[in-house]
Each structure stands twice: as structure tokens, then as C-alpha cells.
Amino acid sequence: MSYSIGKRIIQIVIGLLVVSCSPTKTVVNNKTDIKKEKTIYYDFAGKLTAVQLFFIKNSYNWDNEKILIINYRQPISSCHFDNNKITSGGKNWWKDFYSKINTENCLNINVLANGERVKKKLDNIYYFDDKNDFFLLSY
Image (cartoon, helix red, strand yellow):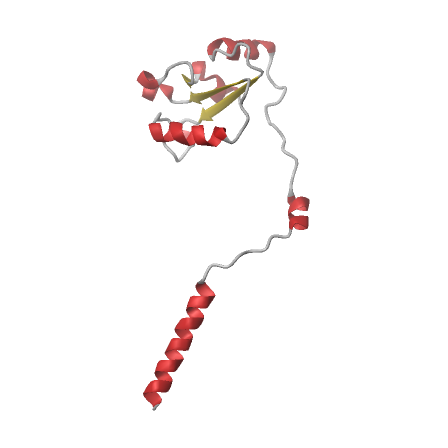
């Protein structure tokens, strides 16, 4: 009889563990979240000189597009990811990311701080080396 009581207690404990470890839905209080939202400040807005703007336009083939989007990849020494590679997986990730954003009339480029490591893959259309370390040294 004590064996069946012990067995029953173990079943109850296991049942409680399963229930307590099961995923549950978290309820979000939208009123609280709205208060936590902060204004986005763009660090580099309006801080380019005419000379810097001219350099960017000429170096990265920015012509008639209204907006220039630069995906800057930091130098290896500043980032724990080795993101200075151009892979098909990376291209697909960025393509998926920007598919959710209206990029009409935008030039969208990738600038690599260590572009010399993948010089053969740089096409100077979508993938560029950080020319004269402009982005690295400017900011």
C-alpha cells in the first residue's frame, strides 16, 4: 500500500513540474509599453559637411535616389562577429530584412570596414570597401 502512495506522489510531483515548466502566454500591458517608448535620435542627422556629402556621393555611386541606406560593417577589432564576409546567407538575410520595408527610391549599400579581406567579392554597386576609412575615422 505504501508503494502505491509513493508512486502516486511521484506522479503528482512530475505532473506539477510539467505544468510549471510549460510555456505560458505573457500578457503585455500596452499602456505601460507606450510610456516606455522613447524618441529615436539619429546621431548623424545633419552632421555632414558639403565636402563629406560630395565624397559619399562620388565614392558610393549615390546619384538620383532620395535616400541612401548604408549598412556599415565594423572592423573585426571592434566587433565580436566576423561580419566582414559576403555570403549568400548574409545576402538572403538582408534581402528578407528589407523586403518588409519600403525602399523605393533608395540606394541600399553595404560598406565593409575590412573590405580588403573580400576584395574579389566587392562589386562597387552594392558592396564597397570603406574608402579611405571614411566611416571608421569620421565618427
